[in-house]
Image 1: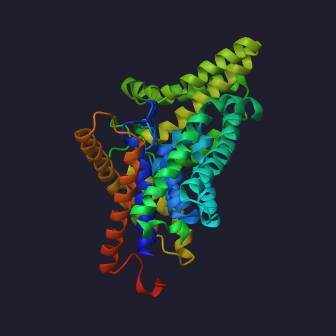
Image 2 (image 1 turned 90 degrees about the vertical axis):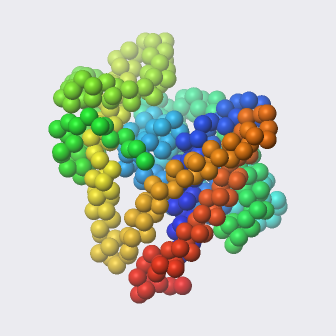
Amino acid sequence: MERGMTRIALFAALIAALGLIPSLTLAFGVPITAQSMGVMLAGAILGAKRGALAVLLFMVLVALGLPLLAGGRGGLGAFVAPTSGFFLGWPVAAFVIGLIVERLRSGPLAVTVALASIIGGILVMYGFGIVGMSIALDKTLAECAVLVTAFVPGDIVKAVLTGLIAQALARSRPAALLSRQ
Amino acid sequence: MISLTSPIRTWAHRVPAGFKLLALSVLTVLLFRLDLTGLVLAALGVACLYLSGGLAFAAQGALHLRMLWPFLLLIALWHGVTGQIQAGAAIALRLLAALALANFVTMTSRLTDMIAVLTWLLAPLRRLGLSTRAVELAIAMVLRFTPMLVENGQRLAMSWRARSRRRPNWRIVMPMAALALDDADHVAEALRARGGILPDIHRRD
């Protein structure tokens, strides 16, 4: 009970911390914010239920008025911006990623997590994001889908990196991988 | 941790947070029902709301709207090309008014007031016999641990720089997560040693 709860809380704090540290650079010098990697990791490491709870807890703190989103944004405005669909899709993304990692037990963890992150962190999350954008900007779903495609390659890179990080984490802390227990 | 509440005190700081949240929900839904004339009036109303807190407060509020500029530019280009200027203006005004209203509530509500509203919202769960202590404790823990994890990240970045000429990259996320998981286990043990988060009657394990 305590362990599950503290891991949920610490992962919510990790998502916040990853948004607050300056953007990291990829091997070829492209800056990325690590916050969405935190969401993917929450699902991959904590599993579907706890991963989604960690993300929901993070969202509650943003709603309460804390500037925890990358770039120091936060507050209730985070729920009504054109990009809020992506934000609202986070817990679902973490849940789907966790579910896939829990179910797909064969194969190397890095590949499974990367695949799960592409399905949950890109397909599912962009689904939410595109619907949100289409409501806010009053454009069709297809038009909004075209607008966000520019961000897909970057997110595929993040999904692959999340896979590598999850595998390294599972090696150094085997007991921490709740999604596979 | 610093919240987004404005240090400039306005009359709205004294309005109960629960009421402001309810009004925000109703007004945001209404914004989607208005036509262009209604939206112009709504946007003017929101601007007056900010100005009622003084110029400095309004300027602070305007700064929070910066994130919208790529979208406003996009709408201007899109509707400029298609010629549907009125529709574009309506969308832009709605975006601005909705975000400004939400920010207004955040800027005029203290963190403690917002937590009080959350506790009130969770009350039905308590009446059903579920403990909401875990939620309240978890919120406190995130507030306490986020600056610590940021510090961990900065320390890891420093030791990276001491060993490498290249800038810290994504690899730093792994030790950050590992340290967070270690902290989680230590805190869990400490909580358990002090009687756990739930009274004994609720314990299952």
